[in-house]
Length: 113
Length: 110
Image (tube, rainbow over all chains, first blue to last red):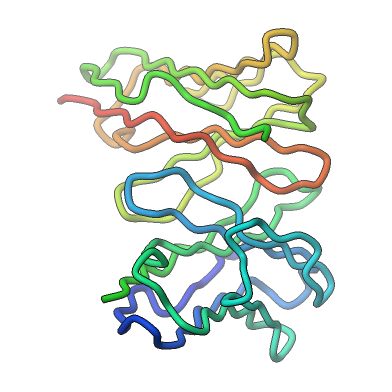
């Protein structure tokens, strides 16, 4: 199956600024997920998105976070006012056929300074 | 939480040797998956084993699942330098989201 593309690959932002991370998974997939990985730590679930709505979110996914599918193919994660502790790798993912494994994007490394 | 936990945290082996890592989890699962992550890169799906399966093979990979002990193992046979990476187990409950363990860092020495 085609890969999942994430942009940008690396973003440095000032604390308090808004960032938008983008994912292009393929337009006919209904399920998408965002995960994050703080350096040296485990991969953590953020949010799942089904048919243009949030289906589940973790405690990490507070009011500063939002997800959208603005044009039917792109899939965005927005952090409204970044904090130092938001520095991490952010991955989007989609399930494979019959939910056999997930295809992850290459990730966006977010550095908040 | 049904998060998987791997051991060992780190493993260093000689090229050609086998590498074995284990994963334990807490609740009933739908399936368990193993992923590889090269340094600073994305996660690559390796293999999936369903709750009604006990063993699965894919190339040099062998995965076992013991639902009575809530544990799984990943064996990489005849390791190569290119196998150097972090390996994560991820459990999937019936909500389909992945719950990852902390990972095992494998270093294969030439």
